[in-house]
Image: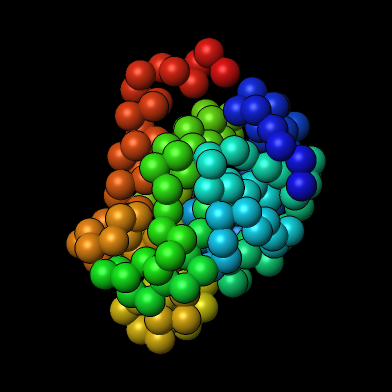
Length: 192
Ligand SMILES: [Zn+2]
């Protein structure tokens, strides 16, 4: 893992722009950003995601090639970037996120990372292009990638169904997209 600044991350996304878009177009869609949690502790990082965000909000990449096809989001990895929060080790449900719930530093860093990547990759920050793994697992974008396996069905994956314990089911994606769009509207990322 290599720690990166938002500026370095933006450059990596620009470097991967054509390969990511070619992969996405081969699937008949736009590039997607998928937001995960690791189900580990705050310091464990995993190679299956391009970007890992540790509990302290620091940002790490597992590869310098963001177009590398990872194995993070079942049947959806081509032309996508996987970003994860290192947390949720013993999370049980939206009402019990265990001893490693997402930290405010992580939630904030995820919004900034999504904003930077969306800017670099020319993406609207909406459900079609920026999804939690919970949303992707139940095909909430209407794209039938595979049989659903999310919170509404088999519950095999429910990453970021909520970002705070006790929040309304399915609010996690809207919170993250809302925060990322707030950063976009502030123009803060233009400085990156
Ligand atoms: Zn996941």
